[in-house]
Amino acid sequence: MKIHHIGYCVRDIIKSKSELEKIGFISFCPPCKDDDRKVNIQFMKNDEIVIELVSPTGEEKSPIDGILEKIGDTVYHICYETKNISNEIEKLKKDKYVVVTKPEQAAAINGNNVAFLYKKNVGLIELVEIK
Image (cartoon, rainbow, N blue to C red; front, side, top):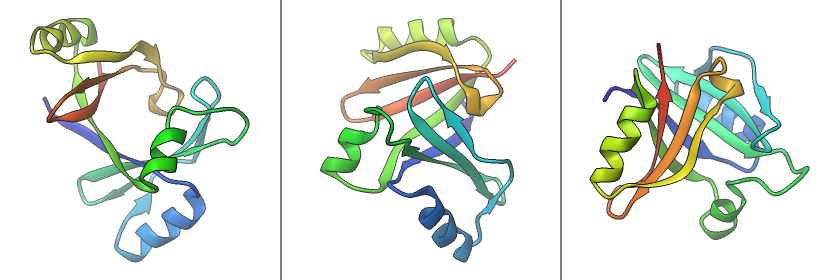
């Protein structure tokens, strides 16, 4: 599978964005608030490398609060593109991946379906369905 982006959970998107700009990353789309997941998202890139900054909105508990409390700002997932998310999930489940979140539309990725899976010795991955 092709890598779509690398996800970073951060406490403060503005501060993290500023630091990443110092090392060559640029924003290529406006920030997005994902009300369903209770996070703010900013995509940035440096040449072909795309990163996703994800921070809690602070309104309610978000999926990344635990990571931020335990580790702090960090890389926490790699997102892979797939043409058929359901088929890919079934293949990965046969390889002992556990579905963390079932496919749902992602506001920050043009409403494309995304799902998160986990496997020991690999960590958290995200799939995004690109048609």
